[in-house]
Image (cartoon, rainbow, N blue to C red; front, side):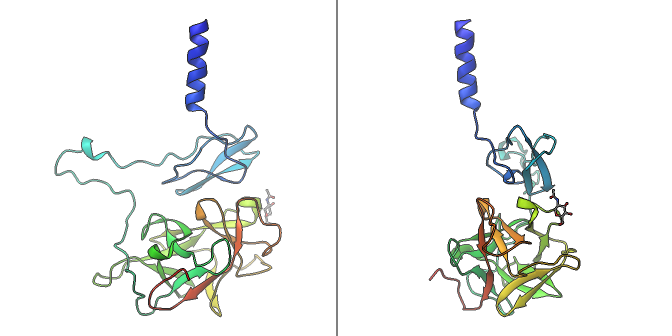
Length: 246
Ligand SMILES: *[C@@H]1O[C@H](CO)[C@@H](O)[C@H](O)[C@H]1NC(C)=O
């Protein structure tokens, strides 16, 4: 008995992991964090890139994305799935017609919009200026240039989830090869706004940046009722030749 319980304690200690708080991320492609929601919440799949602990949801396993085969197990000559279609990226000089897009206030002062992984489908995040993406708005689509200047243009589109998340007031934004079908992006001055028919927002330029630097449309108030783990931000274009954090 003694040996059994010692082993059990060791096993539990070895596998113990923090419980993910309500409304926080518990899974999705590239998610490397904790996956266990509290006993009163379930891990709900929102999209390929994002699962979230929602109070009252039936417990369900987090999305376990298919991993590309380990290189060692692949026979020579077999194409290796890369998982996501990544572009080479447009480089560190702003391309004609495009903008850097960044936050201008703490805690994300001069953090720049980009995709995670870089230049690939996945969540929209705010990250370092050295990996800033390049964007424009075309026909109400937020378009990211992910190809090198020497290559044929490859674009990704900013996609707004219709599923309300954190505090039922936020819509995660991700990058896809297909166009966004929910709402419209527009510049208001240099501020990035999003609106959709049927949803009245106190501030069309209000964003949340939450755990993992994930960007969300904030359907609620700016700087009021901010969910734990999130920061209120407005997001602005910047068109100097290079991005910087000054
Ligand atoms: C979330 O907000 C929508 C729109 O206001 C509302 O219809 C829905 O009932 C809310 N859901 C929850 C769980 O509060």
